[in-house]
Image (cartoon, rainbow, N blue to C red; front, top):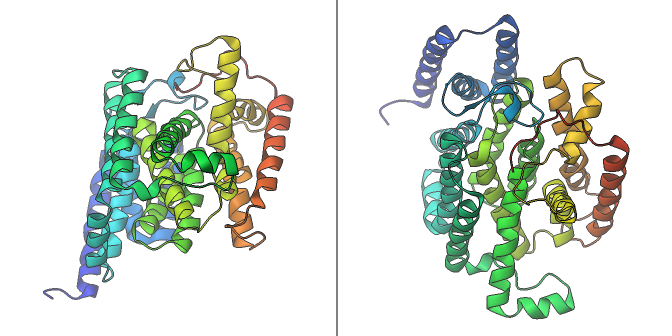
Amino acid sequence: MLFTFKQLSDGTQTATKLIGILILNSFTLSGRELSKLAVMSLLATAAFGVGGLVIILLMQFMTLQSYASDAVDKHGIAEVQASRLGGVALVSAVLMSLALFIINGDKGSEAVSQVQDNWPIWFGAAGCFALGLIEDLRNNSLSPRFRLISKATVLAMVFLLVPELIPSSIGLPGVDWLLSIPFIAFVVCLFFSVGFINAVNTVDGANGLVIGIFVINCYIFTAEMDGIALPAGLYGASLFLIFNVVSGRLFLGDAGAYAIGSAMLVTGLTAFSEGVVSLPFLAVLFFYPCVDFSVSLIRRCINGESITAPDNDHLHNRVYAYFKSVFKSKNMANSATGLSIAAGSSGVALVGYVGELIPISSNLWIFVFLAQCGLYGLIFVTAGKPSNNSQQKRT
């Protein structure tokens, strides 16, 4: 080697400091925003080292760009001017994390081999991300029908190339008989997959909500499945979670939501096909996007509304209306909404997994799911409908 690891590390830290100084000098931040940046930088550095600091500064830089920026009333319950480039920041953070893992270890050949072996899956995730990025940059230039067909086309190609992802049995006799027919199994899996990615995008309306669910997903499956992509995802997503919760000025956008949705979809299908998890456990882990999206569709159909029209009556809208009366800061109320829902839905799966209360391969999780449904309904009814001036991110 031309350089020792210590020399490489010292050089990386020096370069990082210089980059940080250059970026910070270009910022024109208020005292409050500067305080938030300091808090995020300290948290990232303490938890993830200099690499975490660089990623936080990159995210801060993206929030200052004029393109892909929305006005105050465009991003759901945020009520602040925000950037839709969060998906770019998240993917960049994951790729940088992956590079750091490879540089600091002997995982280079393993990572290359995994990408080569699973290139259809990477292709699918990249395709969904690119579709969302076009929408973020051009702001509603793609019709809902075009996006739906495009996602279905990309996912269909993935399932044709990797048929092992398509479940042939879910433990229900009648359904299992239908899934034994390859064409029906393909159509059902494709329909569910497109719906799941749309669900993730739809519920991305509060700080820390979708990204919090993704962090929990990465944590559980990193421990249960091989590969270097999941640890990198956990690293990058955790940094985005810090920035999103503290700052509130960087949103996943369609690119980020599509990327996260496709990543959680693939990990869930892979874990289920390998017998690592049961279907009821996945229902608990992905409870909020699946149930809230389903409730939203049913409500719109009953009311005779378009399923692609904006909607401000999700559970997170109602919870936010409550937290606004508790916190003086709207950003704090926003973050409390997202974190509480992520903790109360996917967090239940995490507690059960870490505490080894129920094996994740057990069907007993169905009772946990039913309890979650009851709690969802109770909160939805008691929280009350938000006022008309509460705006919701477009579906």
